[in-house]
Every structure is written in C-alpha cells, then in structure tokens.
Image (cartoon, rainbow, N blue to C red; front, top):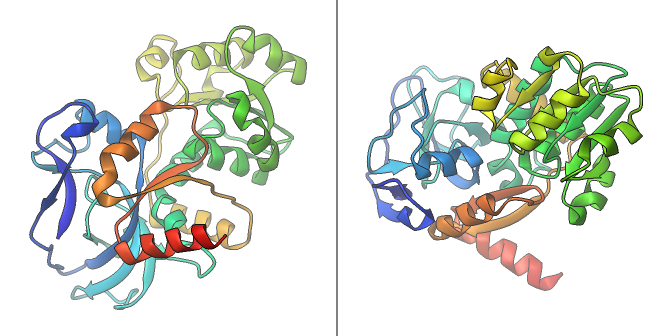
Length: 318
C-alpha cells in the first residue's frame, strides 16, 4: 500500500510517499480501505520532533490519527461490522495510508449525509473539543470563550458549547474569519493587544469558562477573564498551563464519544468546513497549511484518487 511517512524529524519536506506491505486483519479487528484522513496539529508536532507519550516514534513513521473509509476485511470475532460498511474512526499515527486496522471500538458508521472529506477529518478535533468542554463543565447559561475559534477544533467547540446550552460563546479569530464565526453562533473578537478589554465589553459580567487552541498569549488572557482556573484549559500552551496551575485536559477518545458527535452531525447540528483537501502525495503541503495558522476549518488528505477526481469535477461544474 501507499503511505506517507518520515524517517527523520524536520520540516514538511521530510514527509515522503512510500510503499508498505498491506496490513492483514487479525482477530478482533477490521481493515478499512481509507478514502480520507484528517491532518492535525498533533501530526505536525510529531513530524517536527515531539515524541508523544503514548507511543514512541519508529522510523519510517506513518502519521495520522483520524480516517474514514470502507471496511474491506473483518477479523474473527467481530460482529458489529461487515465488509462494505462505510465508517469513520480514530487510530494513532497510522492513517496517512491506503489501509488501516482498527478495533470495532475505534469506528462508527458514517452517516449517508456526511461527505467523505468531512468524515476523514471528523474524529480528532471533534473528540478533542468534546473532551475539553466536558472538562470545563460547560453548561446551560454559561459564557464561554474559545480561542482560535475558526480552526478545526474551535469550529467543533463553538457549536458544542451552543448545543450544551451556553448563553454566549465568544470566539477569537483573525478578522477574515469573523463572518464564519457569526454563522456558527459565536461573537467574534480580534486577536492581539487589548483582547481582554474587548472580551469584557461583550461579557461585562465575566467569562465562565475558556478553551485555548491558540497559544500562551490567549491562555494568559483567559486567566485574566475567568475567575476559576479549574474552568480554563489549553490544547497547546501546556508548559505555561503547568506554571499557572491550570489543569490538563483529561479524557480519552472512544467509540461512544464519536458516536455522539456523529449523531449531532446527522441531525444537522454540526457544520464542518473543509479548509483544503490535498492528495496523499501532497501531505507536505497539507502540513504547511496547518502550520500557517489563522485557518478556517479542517485540512484533509484524500487518499482515494477517484474521490479526489470526483471532488475536483464537482468544483469545476459549480
């Protein structure tokens, strides 16, 4: 099978298209022929030299933690899924590839109304936002501040906070993404100097909870706006959070969590924007786009060439 991997840490050009043996299904697993896979900031950090605590990097290392495709092998003992089922799911550093193995607990059925490109980039940011808001105990009537609200994770977080009853959701973003945040139901605020004062103008009674997906500046602003540090979380400024005694995000990805999110999508309660779709052999460009920042929505890899052709044809015809 074709896969994208890297054999040394470094910039985006260390990513290479390689050939690997097709993985064969084992008892308790299914094999998925991947159509699309999401690109996460996590992937870029690993490629740049960060060793995640949950798995050691082994060269050549494939990347990718979320995927969507069609089940094409079913292992002994699996009864929940059959060959031909359309699914989306999660894994750890395996999904930039034509095939991926997963347990039934790592996948759910793809709704018919969910395009493949959205399905491929759904699980990672969706579950991350769900875990973060759960840790923040977002509830009815809250005022919630979300930094980098137009990005992949922020898009989910804004909509989930509204779905869970938040009275006001304030989202920081670059000015070109403000209209998009309004569509999602958030009140947009510009990054930069004076951020705390701008948020206070919108929420004079204070902010109940804050989620940072931007960095140290946004986290420090959150500390100045939220009274209870237990209701602040960051996805990126981990070292600063430790110094400020802000709790880490807790929770684990699960099929149940993913199924809840997929159900919301199927009901029309989650709108996911695709920032850019790249072919598998364009993974380096996909990483560069993610690392450029200030983006709107998700970046994905289209692994199925026929799907990419269909998407390009659709764009040209519209």
